Image (cartoon, rainbow, N blue to C red; front, side, top):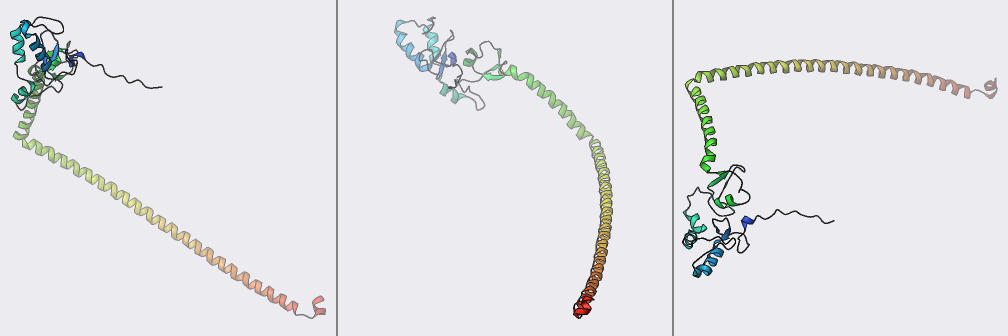
Length: 243
């Protein structure tokens, strides 16, 4: 059975309402519709002779002078060249990130704000969003500064703490030495006991060996005597042998 992949739905605000392609150098009209700059510019030039201009989607009238001012704004490339080094640009719409979405906790641009993703969200300025965090950071800095002043103005306290810590380390070292000494004594005692037991076993083996060899020698003597007697019997004359 073939698996079905669920693709994420494409958002309408990412596309030009004229060419239906992804927005490039976006222009947003007051009615909320978005267009690529080249698309809306060409559309404006075609309708300019009529003296009136309407949104190509909802047909809301837009004063020609106002539209001209919108189209005469610097392009995205020109804006980027004029940006300070530390300005940030929306990677999707190539517009300055000058707003902050509280729900998503991230910077967004003016085009993002009008999108379905952020339309119902609370949007504030980056300065407003950063202020509480900066206040928390300043409070933390004040506490650290106070601690630093205490350390600088009362070095003896720190020295006493260090001396106390070194004393505790020395005590622990002595305890550790005693533990290892006791362990060494115990192992030495065990080693001595094992050596003594091995010597006793070795002695028992030697005694057993001696007794065995002595018994073997006695048996050999007895056998030799028996063999000699049997040989003497075999050498007897037949009559004497049969008596």
